[in-house]
Amino acid sequence: MSAPVRILIVDDHGIVRAGVQSLLESESDLELVAQATDGPSAIERARELSPDVAIVDLEMPGMSGVEVIESLRAQCPGTKSLVLTMHDDPVFIRAAMEAGCSGYVVKEAVGSELIAAIHVVHGGRSYFNVSQMSNVLAESDPDEAKSDKPEPKLSPREREVLELLAQGFTNQEAGKQLHLSDRTIATYRARIGEKLGLRTRADIVRYALAHGILRSDG
Image (cartoon, rainbow, N blue to C red; front, side, top):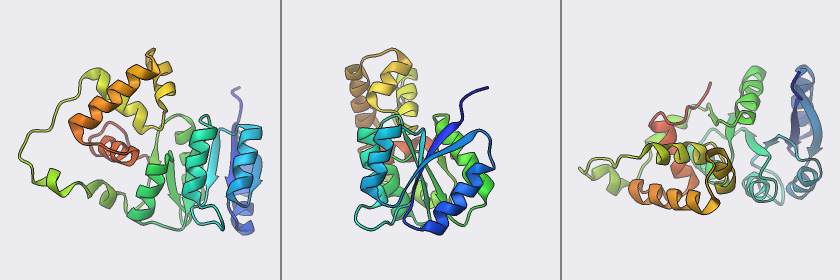
């Protein structure tokens, strides 16, 4: 039997933490290892415990959820960030994607959706099942939209690198997956960005979702 997925909850509202805790306790393959009420304590607990998935609220006093996600990505690369928020808005979704989250679920979703998101994110894929996702995917560079030039083709290797980056892998992690050096992955990333005009990680995720390279599950 595989080890349970280890979870950290980061939310300043006790009732939300209690609800998520109750939900996790009903799943034998999920384990709540810690809770945090603010960003600094979340980073501290993550560094101590190395959870598999951090469920992060976006609005918290002091340090925002976006800042928490950025810090987790930098300091705890083995921990995937899954946003659980009341905000179903393209602005918030793009900010979370840019920070490096692997999933995004709104608090009005049913419990089974959060459970599914945890498993998808832990499995190395992305989960963005929100009503505004189509608006996020639809938004592109106006100059790019007006261009009549055919879209550049990616090589099979570039497509593999793009998929891993969209899933949230760092250059180092992608390199290990493909048996390539960090520098080689960085070169592929730069080449992909130049070909497709993808400047940020949010751009990469949006492109991968829109072109079927990455699925928004749910």
